[in-house]
Amino acid sequence: MSIPKHLKHKPILGVENYEIIDGKYAGNSDAKAISIGKAQWDNNEISAKVFRHTGTKWSRQSEELPLHRVLDLANLILSAYLQKQGNYVQSTILNEEIIEPDEYEKIKEYIKDNPYLEERIRELQNTLKKIQK
Image 1: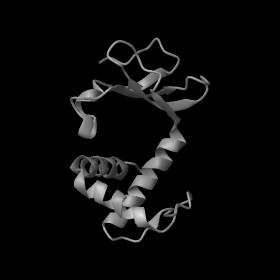
Image 2: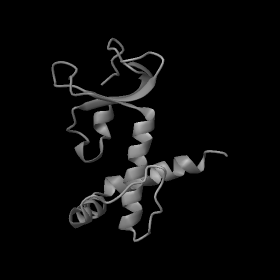
Image 3: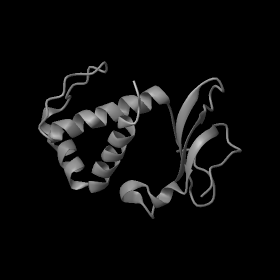
Image 4: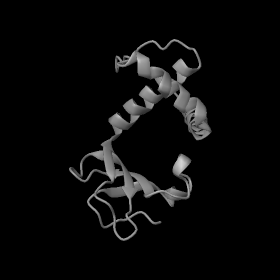
């Protein structure tokens, strides 16, 4: 599905037909597109947006996050991924901590049991390697 351009979030870079590649929801997703663009709350801010569609209209459940929060969440996911591999993670500037030690194993199992996550992490790794210092 095409990225809507009539809503308050103004896309600049995006992925149309995201429902086709939406991880375990691929082929059966309400997330129809993703983008980076001008934030709906402030045109001077850039945000990431997941456009969700109910089947008849664009959903109010669509998520929009400032870019730094998207990156912070990615770092948190990567910390869990490294723990899954048995690698000790030195805290980042986020100062992440395991809040529920008894439940933490479930995150590691979820990552292990869902191969599309490994694929996305490898893609992220390859993209990061292309960044020059």
